[in-house]
Structure formats: C-alpha cells, structure tokens
Image 1 (cartoon, rainbow, N blue to C red):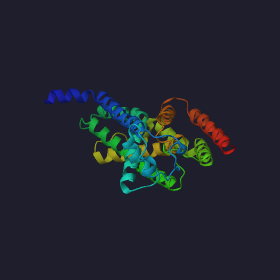
Image 2: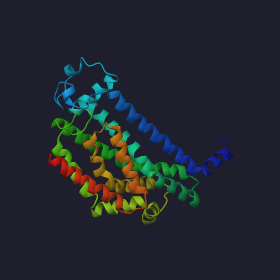
Image 3: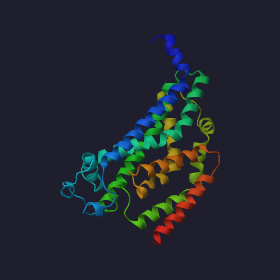
Image 4: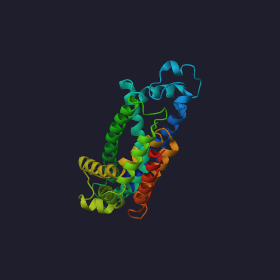
Length: 285
C-alpha cells in the first residue's frame, strides 16, 4: 500500500475502528450461538436420567442429538473435569465477554480514536486504540478466569444443570438479591459514571496515549471501572444459564443501556429493584 493510500485509510480511523468492532462482536456472538446450538443438551437432569453435576459418559452414550460432540465436551466441565475442560470453559467465557462488552465500550473506543486523530499524535490513532482495547479486554479475560473458577466450584457442588444455570432456587434468589442491591451502591454509581462519560474519563486520566504501554494501561483502567460496574450483572448468568443465549443477550442489552442512555442511575435502580423482588420471590417458593 502506498503512503498516500495508507494516509487516506488513517484519515478514516473512526470508520476503521467501528468496522473492526462490528466484526469482533459479530464473530464473538456467532461463536456463542454456535456453541449453544451445538451443545444440543436438555435443560434439566430429569431428561438425562442422571444427576445435575454428576453426569457420566454412560448416561450420554445412548443419546443421539445434534452437536452432541460439543455437548459432551462441555458436560465434563460442568462437573469440574480435566484441565482441558477448564481451558475450554475459560475460552468460552472469554469469547462471551468480548461479545457482551464490545458494543458498550464502542463509544469510548471511537472517542479515543477521534481524540488521537485531532491530537495528531504520531498519526497512529488506530494502533493506540487497539492497545487501549487490548487493555480493556485483559480485565474481562481476568474476570473470565474467575467466572470459570466459580463454575467449577458450582459444578463440584452439584449446583448447575447442563445449561450451566443453578438448579437451586435459594442460590438463584440470593444471587438476584445481591446483584440487585449492588445496583444501588455508591461503588456502582462511581464506576458507572466513568463508563457513561468517556470524555471525563480521558480528561481525568491524562488523555490520549501514543505509547503502546500507556494506551494498554489506560485500557486496563477503563476496564477496571467497567468491571466494577458490571460484575454483579455477569453473576446473573448463573441464574438464567450461561448457555441461554436470550438471557446472555438480555444482560448485554441491559449493560449497553446503562452505559449509553442518558438517564443517570435510573436504569440500574429500576433493574436492581426488580432483581431484588424476583430474588425474594424465589426464596419464598
């Protein structure tokens, strides 16, 4: 590519960043949809003839369902199997976090690229934005490791069904109540405010960074605020099912609305109240 052509591409940095984010999000969601469809597993242990977390290969050997190879690969991880199973679930969580969080961080990334272009900093806003995004995703990869550990523990305690949702109404209710109460906390408010105001975040953290390490660290800082804002909502995946695509999409949409709709703390407080109410209802059943 000639210098003139490259310069023309760089002038359209925001378009390049936006297109890249769309591709990344689509690929991540395609993987989640494919995995959920490939599992082809019943949602309750009653349909498999075994217990929730103690399913064995003999229980599944006579089952002829589409995508059973993938389902069989996932099933051991539900009951905390080998290191390979742990890595498989960790990869699943990591890709799912990319799909869920990329749309909500897009405004921040587009602003970052735009600021870089206006600053004329080395003419490399796309590269710096890429490092920023990498730092952001590192935080969610770390969260994915913690989520994989939580899933491993719940599987060991026989508290997950094959769709990776808790089969305990008490545990589900407690998770909902905890997540709902967190929606009202000052910590949630502080973290959400950093996510809702990208310009304020950049200003308070020194602005656009040209050096890769600086951009990476800034992305990690923004990711930390985002994690503080959304970790409790991610815990809800164990209530509705990690492989329940509609549930996953619903949480992703709620996160996007919280960060982008100019309604302050209204959405978190309304959703938090509903979570607590549903959680109390589950505990009383």
